[in-house]
Image (cartoon, rainbow, N blue to C red; front, side, top):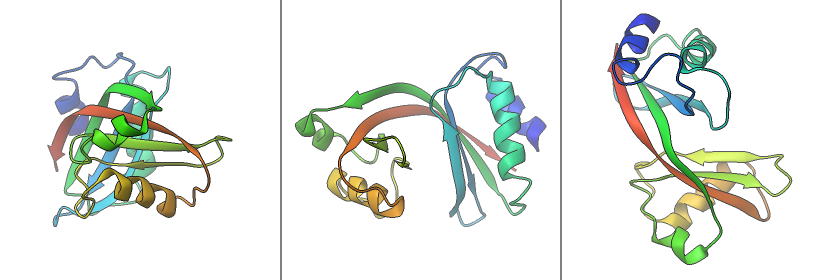
Length: 147
């Protein structure tokens, strides 16, 4: 399976590229099983895929699709009006507590998230984040691999 994932990924990217990525696993009903990623790294994509693959797929065997999101534009947003103008269908949202002790992320186009306020509230609630946060937005290049 890892060879198929790498084959699809490296059609578009070099194995020694340093990119930030998210790795998500879905079952046959397209339910998200697990997602994890790296926003800042000095590791090559090849090493990241190995780490994420062995860390996730060794534990979850009923995976139907693997989605690899290559981070393109990553930026901190401080302007609330600008944040509220983003579409939760197109952007990822990453929150970090001010003391950097807690983080949370929300994938774009999450089924029941219809607006940014709901998205940010969900991230905070799901990840037990309280108080003020730093908000980052980004979009990705998505590669889907069916197994």
